[in-house]
Image (cartoon, rainbow, N blue to C red; front, side, top):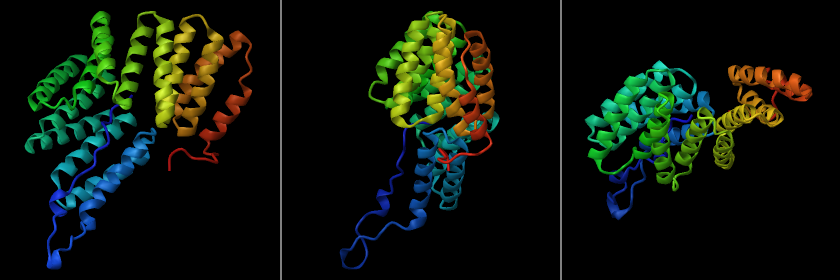
Length: 311
């Protein structure tokens, strides 16, 4: 879930010095700021889960930064393009963008930023089952982050390592890493959500369903506050899984109904199918009428939406 880094504001201090006749400050030329505006618009959309819309703005930012040969901006836009592709499920495109951004950050001597792109790449490798390669990538990211000395990617690396260890069924190690990640991310709401979700998944995998519900609930609270619609849908879906395995099927039905509606509003047809299949089977067993939910979901997937979440 979760792959973009914190909001970056590109600084142009060199262009803000007082110069020219009469000591007046020259305004920054538009071509030097337009890339940053597009990048920030894309980040706002990404943080809602509107990956296709975000991709358009990240692409514009990349073009603008490339045209002005502003290399740090080019690297930032490439990293964010990778995150958007990851959110859209286009994993190979994501990896290509992360690799390109990584090389450019190294060229610029930005080891902390280079570490974050490796962590982002590792998340994609984990999602596609390339666990050994992901572990090697995370180890490289950790070494770079320590070399940079600023800890820019530390929490992201820890979170992804916890997810990786969970996938490898090394549950004890995963819990230690994710507990440290939760402690380290208390000041960063975005990272806190990722850590709560990862810990919830670990609890789900190890049969501690009550704790899983608690962690997914914490993630849901943060995602609601941040307006991360895709995260809200994911939290509800996995919370439903936890309730289902806990033997509280009516609780899972209630979460899945809500999850399906958010996915439908985002136009996530595959995710809707996944939820509705489980929802339909549980509703039959529990004699719960889901007609209204199905009606709204079908209508929204057809594009009959009054209030679009993504422009």
